[in-house]
Image (tube, rainbow, N blue to C red; front, side):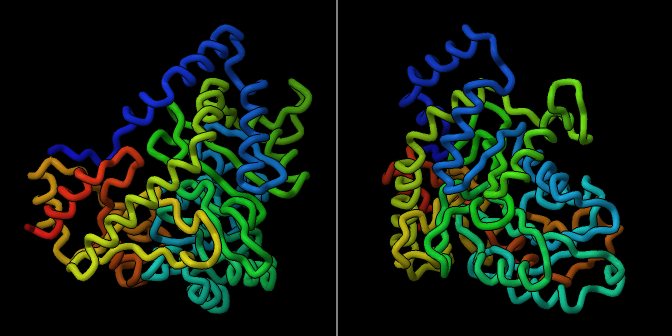
Length: 381
């Protein structure tokens, strides 16, 4: 049996006619960049995420960059974030001219640890003491929200802006002390990716920034179009960060199915949890389950911990089962960031996660028979 890590063909076959129809509408209109389809998607997604505003952009990476630009992050500034994430989180900080200041992760959720954030603010490395810490980018990794209440308390105490990296977490919910909130509607801005492999994935690159702040929303709209408004009048230096109408049209169709896809992923995660209980495989913990929220986890990835990962990967691949390492090298140890002076051992939990974690297939169309085959192979039966 073959079990791919991800199979988008099954998803497409179920919605093919709807998708082809809206693509034809865009082609017939010949309105390919921004426009009515993008505006509709922005409105729908803002409502889904519980935010007042949503601004469609060209990718999840550009969402992070434009959010930093909207906050006027610049050289001499520092941004606190996690060393255990996709490259774009830190790459965007550096592209904005700022310095990433890392705080280690919680070993259970893989999300940034608020205790470590407070420690790094109170006692930053000597080489960073002259920098002004202006913002924080917590990442809602793998589909589970970071512990935002203490992070927002820290941000308020120290006057920091908060950009949520919600690229893997659209629709995920957090049981805040103020009530249930969704990723992207908690901090000053939330950044989303619609890379095809995401729970809500387009037919290419696409992204979105959410915010509850009207002034920030207006600035984001300018920045995504070269800082221009009206046309040819530039009050800011922005970039070409516009969302294509074709992507918005496809995403509008998929958004209607997103909740059912989340539910299917949770069902698949539950099967894995039960089948792997008591084994040498450590399954992910949904820390907000049982807290009265539906989307306590959306399982953009189902990530386990194993001690003998290399041997296990070889066994999985020999059995024609897809798997992936997210992420084999923590960001503080990436070669392109070595000038920041970080060393191995600086963030032990992130480094341990990089050594031990492995992502398994979790997509909605995954069958119980396929999961049984994956589990059998994992256990070495």
